[in-house]
Length: 243
Image 1 (tube, rainbow, N blue to C red):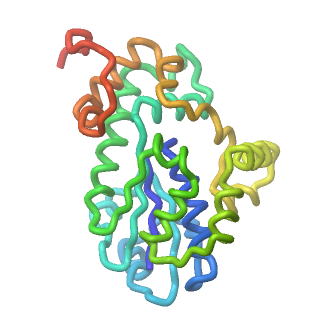
Image 2 (image 1 turned 135 degrees about the horizontal axis):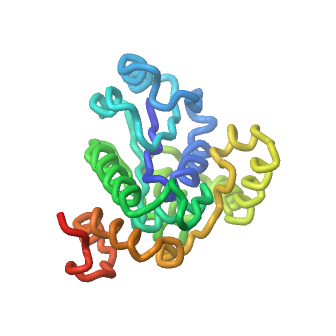
């Protein structure tokens, strides 16, 4: 079986990957893929078809050749998303892209938003796809663990639930991020945590991170998706750049 954690960047996908790994450990033999979905379409489908082994992969933007051939049978997708403006702002904070940096600006903001939405649509269209909204799942870790266990078909004892919730607590995640920053690569391999992983989890923090021009560009690029996902728009249409 292939289990794919495929969230939008900065949307809680690492948290979901940690919990999925904890739930799947001890069921069938489990391998955390170090090459994502696999090196080829054939390898990806072989993993999905193997009933005696589970492959756990965490990906954000798979190569196009793999994206076009994503399997349904034998595969479970765990997709997370958040207000895409917050995803953008969080990515820039993590990478410490400051105002005026060449790595940011309205055009780059638009590109980021469109790519995240386009890739997300590919994953959400899978037959067996669990979808988690960041703003909801981070507020109820016990509910998240229970929901993931049910989707993955894994039995869950109260003791296991408590263990996973305790290990997923924000203070534990911050400690892991600090260890990675200090050079402890084993933490990253075990928990998917990266340097500067914990930044600002608040909803709406994009208003303090993005410039007005970047925020308008991001909202313009994602306005239909934002409305469909029930996120409020903050700018008048007249403020959007001309097509």
